[in-house]
Image (cartoon, rainbow, N blue to C red; front, side):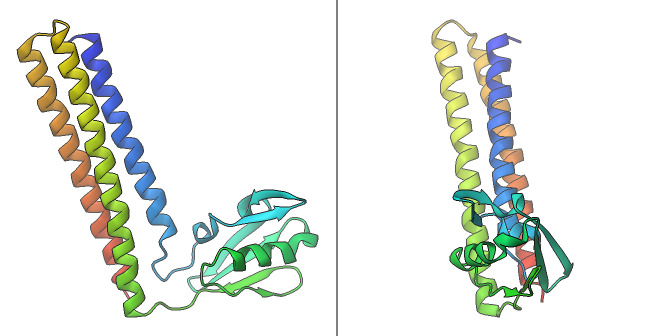
Length: 187
């Protein structure tokens, strides 16, 4: 097989894999009723004047499915971490216990669960769009190679391979979405 064709296939697969990783990270941020340290991933703390990810300023644990404990390495920034969590508008109300912040994760209502499923479906759809975009780019590259002298049969086989790859990744997105939806809807 032509090196350029193999490069195109590898590039398309890598791009589709990247879309899957992005989806998995997006799903981690959608809470399904269980507390997890990833719920605080987007929180930025003003650490001596520098916006810093909360994970770089504190130890974050989940002793049980309903609470998150944030224990800063530098006790003097406990108040800054508390302000950052409130400012992130995650629906959490941390309680300051002097050395740690305790965040009780409220049980989510049926309506909120449905909203979370909708949000997860939107994330999944973004990933599918990204995967299809990778397919389109790869097909355009193959058409360009065909104009430059690539065998017509080879081009058709490569486009079929790209479509199989696309179908495989779309199927993985659907499976992940089903798992996430079941996780969210499970009381």
